[in-house]
Image (cartoon, rainbow, N blue to C red):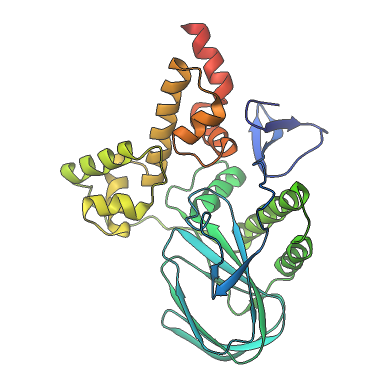
Length: 336
């Protein structure tokens, strides 16, 4: 056991939830990151409005954790939604229904949908639906950073140009249907067992999505101009001033007076990394300073530098430094 509820297992040892495959010296091993479940945390959240879970603290989706919600009822009014954050939505149909659906400019009128039918909506695509029959659908709100981290774990490299999920509509996916119905069956399990089971299933869902529908963005032939020096300075100053708190791409872009899309591309052209990766590196750099100069407990330190949990902090810290926070502190204390 490491300093942050992280297990490293190899060979025939038993495995635990939230698996990340690694290869070291020719041996496959599995890195498990466990986030302590909160007893009051629901596995599946109800939707009072279409695609909008009845939940507040997790819907910024800045921590790489999948949020699941359920849309069911008989409301036949028009429902509209547009993803404003950095995440995709996967819809899995649980019961037969009929609706008219519009995704951006594409219209799918009077569609009969059956259990197992799926639809994937990327960030920024307006969606509109009118149901003409009772409905029951699961919605998976998948942070883009989680997609990219899973891609790195499975492919051994960070997706430099990002990862997107292709919408296969109309299509049925028998495996996703089974995983979705399994999630509904464990939704009422009390205690940590249900949450750990849900973590397993969430990882399986994302892995399956990446394998069948994942696409890395093609390299752009047109050269993107770098962020101007004064805008870069503003962005860096904003990030440094908010390392300890949640930072959205829109917040940093707003500080420079640019849209999210233009800011992200120009920031990467100027620094060589995406804004989120730069933010993670700066948080880890501050954490290293604090590890070397204070005795602050690692769980408290993780929250101080802006991570939502010690487990996530440890995974990112090890990816960037090669050591867990506890081991890094031990090594540098010995040197000093």
